[in-house]
Amino acid sequence: MKNPEQNTRFLAKTFFGFESVLARELLSLGAKNVSELNRMVAFEGDQGFLYKANLSLGCALRILMPIATFRVLNQSQLYDAMLSIPWTQYFEVNKTFAIDTVLFSDHFSNSMFVSQKAKDAVVDHFRATTRKRPDVNTIEPDVRINLHLSGDNMTVSLDSSGTSLHLRGYKTVTNIAPINEVLAAGILHLSGWTGQRNFFDPMCGSGTLAIEAAMIACRIPHAIHRKEFSFMHWDSFDQSLFETVRQSALNKVREFHFSIYAQDKAPSAVRKTEENFENAGLSQYAKVSRADFFKTLSPTESPLHIVFNPPYGERLAIDEIPFYNEIGNTLKHHYSGSEAWIISANLEALKHVGLKPTKKIKLYNGKLEARLQGYSLYDGSAKQRAAPTSSESE
Ligand SMILES: C[S@@+](CC[C@H](N)C(=O)[O-])C[C@H]1O[C@@H](n2cnc3c(N)ncnc32)[C@H](O)[C@@H]1O
Image: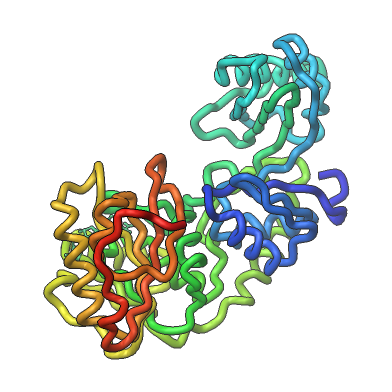
């Protein structure tokens, strides 16, 4: 970044379906010129804002800083384009680097080949300028360069985040089939969770939804426990600005006046959730216990904001249709007055919850198409109980 106070254009990547919640997060942090794209959101901000966005956003997977665009039709143009970038202005030769390539171009068919060719050009640029060559590290590089080839055009970006931002730094133990943290934060935003009442995940696994819910309620920057971001290896990195931004984000943390209830029938899941809450420094809000959702009453008499991802599909073997039917019965009989949201990739089983959803949102959990369905569980609601439907409305 040439002038740290000048606004630069960035791209925050996310999952399908979360563009609007990510745009809202960015606007509330103070981003300028925010626009929603396909699985990403473009915005402008200065260097301090880039740090703030990486630290605070719940729904971003990584934040890219485009540095050059070229027209490239073959490998020699690709090499020349990469060689022409003044790489020594961006990072020092003693940093390791890696190149990630995303291909939507008829001129190239193999992203590994493109990364390799681009890497040669970066190394040659350093060799010509410094007489030394930087090392490549594809596993844990200091600096990540992102190439996006679409049609005749190539955009070269520096990836400011490094490893995906779903790696928050609080999860040391995972249970079977944990949900991605960015997916969890996005689901919570889509469900309307702001910390307005007690929260409940009755099938909490390693506690991701419950911990992300506590972070949103307290306005805790989602990546506050991360030790490393790729921008820390850039020449432009300003440690004292980073500390100031970090402290100012922490100053905005607020008290949460309700509880986060998290339950699971597996004792190992309960232990893992407790440990992860502790790592996140949020144990004071957590009421974690072992319970079978179908055999216990609500953990509190007050209305709850319930969000969970029941077992489904490839990773957890259960007889899903009766299981989802039991979920619907339990919600109806024991949680009236609450609001419940279920995310599942078993679209057939979801129909057997047997309650009329107030909202259905198409999402993906990894490669699996999923639905987030919301249910308002009003008192004595014989009306809302509906026969399973075979048609889906979006
Ligand atoms: C898909 S996992 C949840 C993953 C979790 N969201 C996470 O991020 O780790 C489903 C969880 O439901 C739990 N479960 C299955 N049947 C249950 C029941 N009847 N009552 C409570 N928990 C149950 C399993 O033990 C498992 O941990």
